Length: 281
Image (cartoon, rainbow, N blue to C red; front, side, top):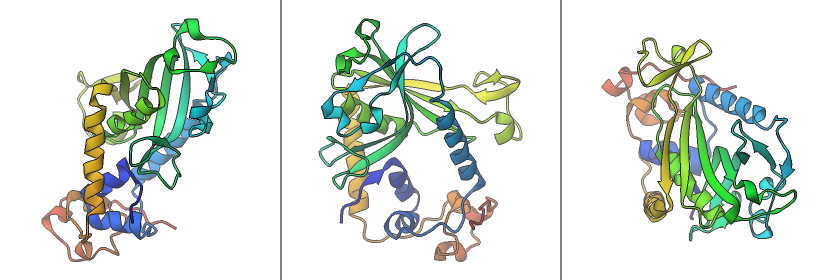
């Protein structure tokens, strides 16, 4: 049976097929959860709650019916102005989905083939198109920025935002590019024992952070990104043996007691990393 996949499920399959089986097929309850994952979820929730609170809202824009069918959460999104008086509106923790033909569908649709949840989207619109209660059309779009909040200590995987850019190209026909931005929200002091105050970090309110990363994804890349997702999903759908894979990531696995390979340790790989799992109640 075909299952809807996500960037997270594809990543889990590539890391360890058995972990994928436990999490996405058997839907087994995690035995452990890493402190880093719990911290990341908490920070993401705090950011999501803080973003909508703004006194800059001036107008309401509405999507035309063909969009609201699939993206009802977007309706009535307030319009804001940044410090340069550029009008924009924001979409926070938005759920997207596409079917097997990569046509837009709802996140929970039975036809969903690939789906994801974006942290934050900032959509700049043309000033001349702003009118109260005006219908929202694609030709109003000036620029789209797609953000990902990162709470970890390592450089982020850019592939996730590149995959999510497909949702925006579907949502706004005629959009030529999406600006992707990774923002590191955890101070380096909390993630590194030693770090250099070099060109890759900046000081904010007395603490140092990795510099944000920014790059553009062009609509011309749509076909290649789509093909890459399809190939990864085909590997999952064609898998018959969900065998474990011993890697350093075993030290942060959610299912150590259920995994025979973990029990058979110790191995050089496992010994090289201290187990940092947190028992769930």
